[in-house]
Length: 278
Image (cartoon, rainbow, N blue to C red):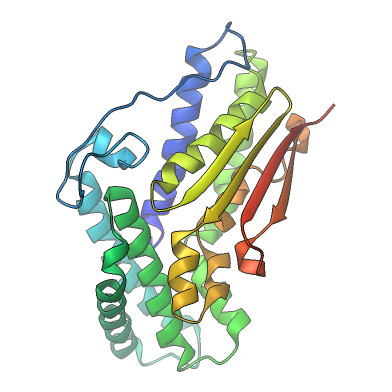
């Protein structure tokens, strides 16, 4: 349950793209609909907020994001207790460790609070601080970094990836066979949605054409936080590192995916490219 907000964001993206695909059936598949430029006011916003910087939950149900993020933090901490029971190094110290994680989260959130500029960035900063706190506390007990990264990925919802991927394949197949929707264009719109979900705290460049689409992330809030804290490897557990599941293994639908660069590997940017396969 710890990755609830991430899973809901994934489901919303699938629903959002499905709705657009159905609404454009029969139209030119290369003409992707444009987002409406709306504004939203909340207590975390400093100045006017565009559609690109306002959180999708704020637009759908004002107040739901704050409630869900609170639940997500509580589920995350409860999930920490469950993780402790599975590892002999942590077993028996569940309450102590979960309290350490909660205190560390508050500490890191206070340090990086200045990075919160709108609703979207607030979600990202809170998630980054939960990941950071869990990794730092667990590292006092488990010395194997690879094992720690595996734990964090699972806690971020990595274990649900097969289910989400199956839902995606089914959705794309139905749109292709029943509604005659161009699958490549639908997947390219998902990549555009990923850019929108990142918000103004990221610096991204999305480009698309008839047969190719690409997304470059030149500045990543997660990477910035983890780099400042001396653990850049945690970038591999968050953000587009998880979102790649939306684009990988789509050869059956004639969509190829290449990850050309990755901040987590020490590159200067994250670069993802989609290509229409013949």
